[in-house]
Image 1 (tube, rainbow, N blue to C red):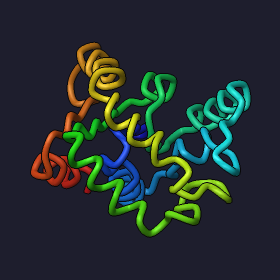
Image 2 (image 1 turned 180 degrees about the vertical axis):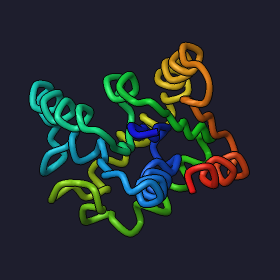
Image 3 (image 1 turned 135 degrees about the horizontal axis):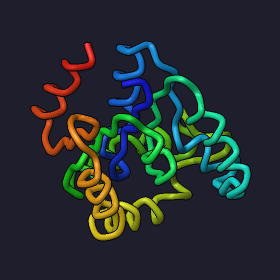
Length: 164
C-alpha cells in the first residue's frame, strides 16, 4: 500500500480519511480539489491538471483524496467511501457553514463555498448514477484487498485499523 486513492461522493469523508491514512503510513497527502480548481473556482486547464497528476502519481508513495480515473488506475489501493446521498448532503451542509464566504483548507484562494453550492447539490445527486458505477467497475477489475468498499462507519473503522 504505497499509492492510495480515497474516493467517493462530495461530503463522503474523503479528506478526513485520507488525512488519517497518510498520517498513519507517513505518506504525502494530495487533494484533487487543489489540482482541479484555481482561484475563484476556475477549473485548471486539462493539460496543466494532467501534468500535475502525472508528477504526483509517478512518486513512490502518496495518498490522494478525490475522484479521478487516472489516479484510480495508478493506485495500488482504492478506498471507496460509498455513503448515502443524505449523508453527503448533511456533511456538506455542516462543512460549508464554516466556509460560506471563504476558502476551506485544500482549496485555492477566493473559493468560498457559497459560489459552488448549486454545483455540489448536482454532484451529490448525480454521483450514484454517473460516478459510482465507474468506481464499482474498477472494483470488479481488481483482485484481493486493493479495493476497500466502505458502506458504513463500522467498515471504515475496521479498515482504518488495518493501516495502523
